[in-house]
Length: 190
Image 1: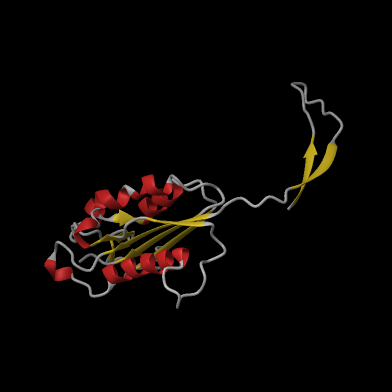
Image 2 (image 1 turned 60 degrees about the horizontal axis):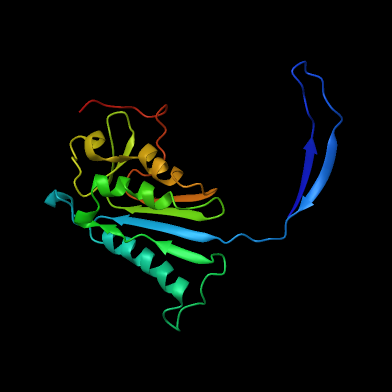
């Protein structure tokens, strides 16, 4: 679109030059790629923590975008015109969704450019520590100590921030994934 630019030079003595103003119009459209990574855990190492649909949700989300990007089935809508290309990481599910493998997604998102879109999806157990900080539970979670193996919101944001994309979306389908009002909450010792 149209960009209005104003330039002024200032020297070491804080003397300012005359201001020059001009407009530049850019009609070129950059290519836009969707980078999608999905993590879903239904079968945990701790057999008491099983879920039914989290791994399926991660696979289904990846499949949804993959089919629409390739137009693989004629019954589906045409490929999404918002993206010139769709890059989908192999979904991390169940035993493959360890803390180490999840944190390696930084390398995947590092390929995204400024005009690309980066989407990171998590489905599984979520829990709060004693300070009410949220952690997503990877396959190898130590449920008694969330901070030991859990993926914090900060870690999730770091995964996405490895991308230069200006458009990033973090989706979390887990208990306690909503923001907690720590100032208004009462923490009880158990």
